[in-house]
Length: 92
Image 1 (tube, rainbow, N blue to C red):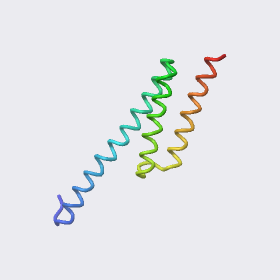
Image 2 (spheres, rainbow, N blue to C red):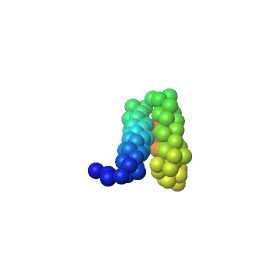
Image 3 (cartoon, one colour):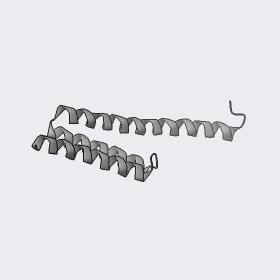
């Protein structure tokens, strides 16, 4: 346990930040999972919708420095590539 007032405050701040970070990371994970499920189901409308949701979650996290901006860009690129592959497979 913290011995000083400043240390107590720092502990409170760290706990608050940790909760905020975990919430953002959970949102990213769920958005990516929803997108993968929509790819399996095959409804193109829901695929576009979940892709936008995933983009939004990744961009928010990158803006808040939760994840590196390049990591967000890389994930977005891979998601778009998956969607394109799925559409090409359907067209064939």
